[in-house]
Image 1 (cartoon, one colour):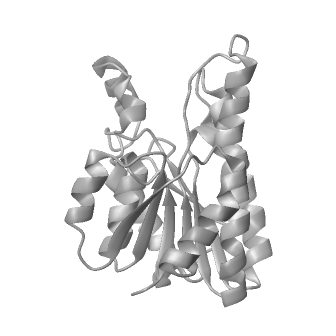
Image 2 (image 1 turned 120 degrees about the vertical axis):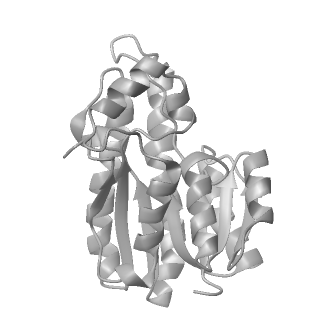
Length: 243
């Protein structure tokens, strides 16, 4: 896996950072993209062994910059072997009262941006006859959750996108899969009070929340050679919430 370049969006915190670290540990040359570098990313970069971990700043909401981003990575780090489309926002809100602009922002960042980035990233993979694309969905895409209807819609769209793209890309050696986490112990759940977190954990078979590293392990498997014959799937990592 030495020399294989993998792009991880939202790679400076939470699931994205855990994924970037896991892939670097597996020997990949990981390029993390986010608007800004975090202290956690800087600390993680210093401790990586096996592969390497790099950072490129980019606002993924600026759609006209996505093709240039892929070109920059290719020029500075080499051709892309993998893409982990993780970056997303989870703004809650009841649909009836949610501002139109906020609905548009969620769809823009969670659906349109990863689709366009994938478009540009996969071209080189298809030309090379090999590659890995992993999208990060959510169990909310198929279970629903109060005040997250728009977020759920964006994540459901990524599942449909993943399954269909697997058909398009498979004939040229590129696998496309999704990972659907349950509630994860990240900044997106820190807004819950302890009672809410306990209620969510109690609904799972394992009676706990998922850690970012659990999701990262699933992604790392799908990017690895061990998953060469897995494509068009959705891997659920939710401590049994949907069991």
